[in-house]
Image (cartoon, rainbow, N blue to C red; front, side):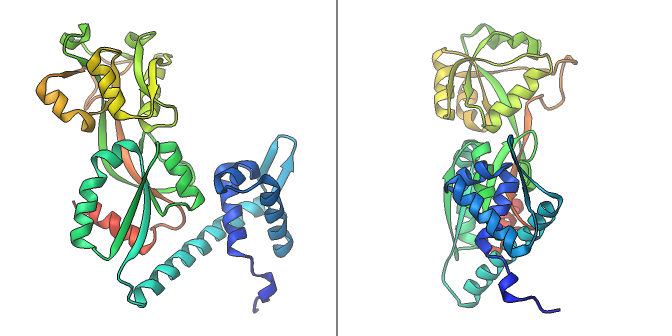
Length: 309
């Protein structure tokens, strides 16, 4: 049976419903899309009228998808992804010289991995122009969910909820002190309880680095104590070097300092063992996207180049 054109939903309305699902409610979806909550509510109601379905259940404590809403969201993801593929394919068929791809990466990834990826892309796929944004892992995931970027790169113990992902590599976090710190000569690994109440130079909540550290400390029921809290790896390195406080960051960020002996990595163990194979603060660096099993053509090409490297 042919579908009446009047019944076909607007793509922006489908994107709004997907944002409601990913953000957990109409209000949060409105904030992620940069629109007012009344506008978002009106958009959802218009989509419900168009489809003849109740998609969102509204209550005093917020809003949630109905069973029908969850089904429509999954179908909407496919429609939006197919539309993106169509747009990319049309651009390729027109023979345009460059395809613009916007990605967002966590600070660690942006500073220490993205530059080499861009060099390889310039050689292997010069027709793709890449713009890179930086944010912490939680904000990267939110930008991907909202459709602001096609691809995100995050680090952490688990993949962001509601997004497709593939593992790029693994990364090790290190507890770092300057060479004159009492821990610099430690041979027995420290456990989470040994850091209870110890002031640390920390990344801000929402960063993948902070998330992995908090999970490890929680093995002993410990919460991190902040001497300073900043959204900058460079500032954390400076804090450790100056003796303000020990810090926990990626080894990728301190290769030179470790090689020169200006910083020392303190051995760590989990809460229940004397040692931990590979170190307890290992995490995955992932590419994340929304929609189908694979991202659009330009993003897929970038992933191919990264994974081949």
